[in-house]
Image (tube, rainbow, N blue to C red; front, top):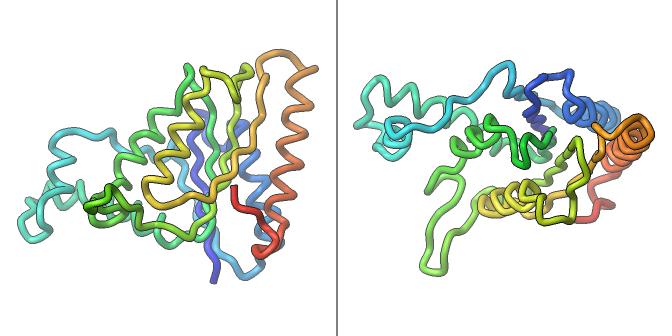
Length: 209
């Protein structure tokens, strides 16, 4: 059974425009994959704790040596990793806040980057262990930044996913959302159409980014 994981990162939860675009994709994907399963992780409703030294040490400790507190900290990460591992398709709703990703997404990434579990170090450098997945990122911005030096967000997300071995990543942008209806509506309409088209494609017809 094919599985999809939707990750909403908007501060406004399901009301965020990035979440709404992700929802458009998921609705179309459900129609195209009636036997598929969907899991939703909303980082506004259920935020992942930000990384601390104590939490990081819990990740590094051997399971049999962990204190009860460390077991609880590591357990959060383990659950997130298993959820990510089980997904074939990943959909991320990604607003831009102050030229960067939401801090909740950074916290999520910090919890799923686990040496020996989602990546490993080799004599030739790091190797991702989560290959074979496809990611769709719905990136919403108040201004227009794609393709400019201000867009560190896209590079960061793409590089992080590649570090885990996930290289089939498609970005769908909706920009200029704070620049008035003349810009906002066409941007949303274009991104919505793209969401539906990508989701409706059969797997063998999809083109890797």
